[in-house]
Figure 1 (cartoon, rainbow, N blue to C red):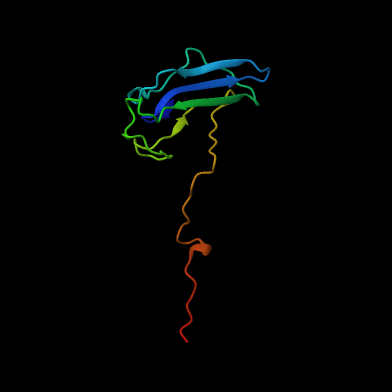
Figure 2 (spheres, rainbow, N blue to C red; figure 1 turned 90 degrees about the horizontal axis):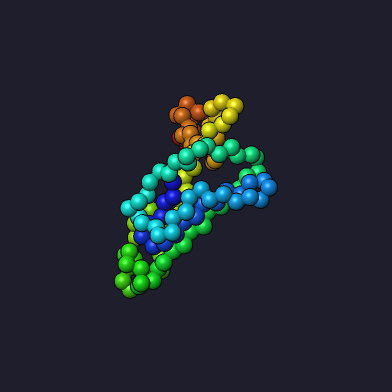
Amino acid sequence: MPHMHLLGKEVLVTLISLDGAAMTLVAIKDWDYNWQETYWLKQPIHLKKGTRIYVDAVYDNSAANPNNPSSPPKRITYGEQTTNEMCFIFLGTVFDDGPRLRRFPPPFRPLMEDESRHKPKAVSQK
């Protein structure tokens, strides 16, 4: 699932197998912000350890881009707003040997009040 904003023009997601063979997973040559959809493969792909996935994205921050939210064009940085820009690729996977979930980085777990390092230190009443 590719995700870019209004300056996005193209996105390409390529899988490179261990033998160097390339396979295009997603290729959108004329990006449209309104078409951000989930794309499903017709057949699952079995990946081996060491397989690489590359993402190439092209942006157009010129006055010639009719979707450019800035007129005249201005410097754009990463951000969550539609007037900022980003590129994410969301991928889903399953494992042959049963369900596993890996998260990187590890999920956030707030400390509980009864955990010693979270308890307030006693204050001297001198």
